[in-house]
Image (cartoon, rainbow, N blue to C red; front, side, top):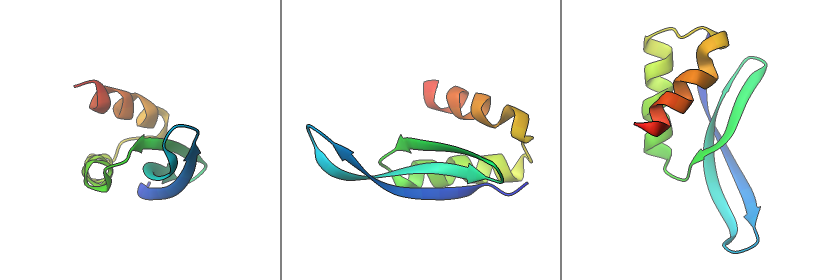
Length: 67
C-alpha cells in the first residue's frame, strides 16, 4: 500500500478558490484534510512507514487530526 498527497483546488463561497491537500491510496481517498501541505506530507509519511492497512486509513487520519 502506498499513500500519496492529493492536491486539489476547491471553491469556497466565503474564501473563493483555495488549495487543499488530502491523501489518496488505491481506491480510497480523503480530500481537504488541510490547507498545509507539510501537515499532510507528515501524515502520508506516517501511513507509509507504519504500513497502515487500507481498512484503518480513515481512522488514522481522524485520530491524527484530533490530537
